[in-house]
Length: 83
Image (cartoon, rainbow, N blue to C red; front, side, top):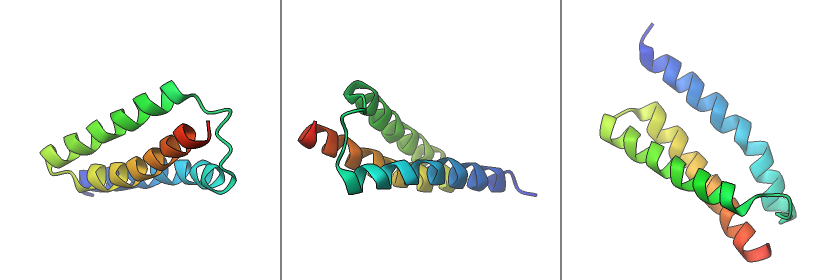
């Protein structure tokens, strides 16, 4: 089995785990209990993971972090907008 499959499974599971909370926040626009500092650091960190994946040419890392970055950035924007 190729080591990339481990990356694809890990990427799918960690990204999918984030989706329900992201959808709940996007739908409700309730961001009161979300830490702004945590989401800034998290979103920047995911951006760096994405860049690292691009530099390595690792498609599991690229795909997962691109999707997670989009979700995290959306929540961050909602936090900045709705507090």
